[in-house]
Length: 93
Image (cartoon, rainbow, N blue to C red; front, side):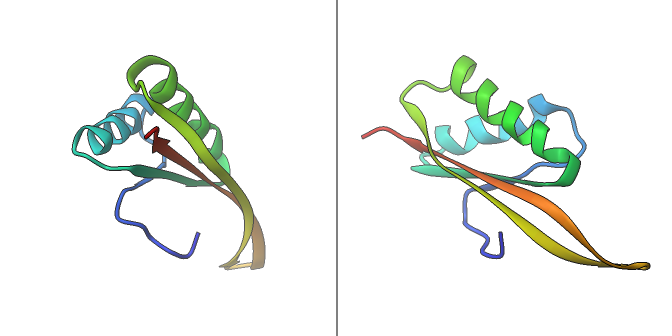
């Protein structure tokens, strides 16, 4: 998750529908692909965002790729591993 693409939605602690709106807006503005990224506890919210977007709001859009990884984060007590996910949605051509 080092590379930031132009059409990227970073998922955090806000309600899921905020992120769904961001994804739908990106596609309505002409984006071919939108990446949904999250780390740690927000991963389930990112999956919900992708599924709600695909099933309820976006027609002609598919899951292109799902990338999972582990990032090493420096904390006060040392290093810790944090899971991350990137879900790439793409419009069908």
